[in-house]
Image (cartoon, rainbow, N blue to C red; front, side, top):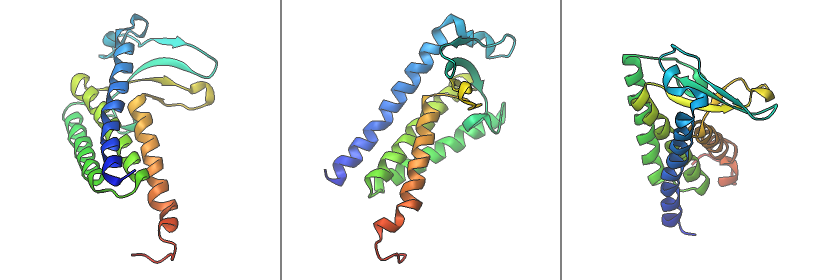
Length: 174
């Protein structure tokens, strides 16, 4: 496959991630058991659907960044929106110029996930999180966009740092 076609497929992955992310969040928001709209203002608890001993669907409004860090409201919400958009645009530019297939895949995952979470932050002031693996001692609740960002970041790390020597067999920096 040529680089132009790979690049087009990578850019095509971004809307796929957005649709999966927003569709899954829409399902959560419309399910009465989660009490999503009423718990947005923290006046009522959010709901949970217990599925297995290791995996549940638990509604959480995340006002921070990945895994609930840097919780922010008010003006900080909009600073976070702008920072996330700047990163998405920067990674989009990098994607348009990236030579490697794995780099393009990783960047598309990060961009798609970032845009998915920005949409929530603009609409609600917080991000819809609902995938709960606390039965596996994973304490964070996350969503499809978070998963895409995390997988993309890991792939980008692997590509840029762990596979960099295999791209350059002489080991010299060029």
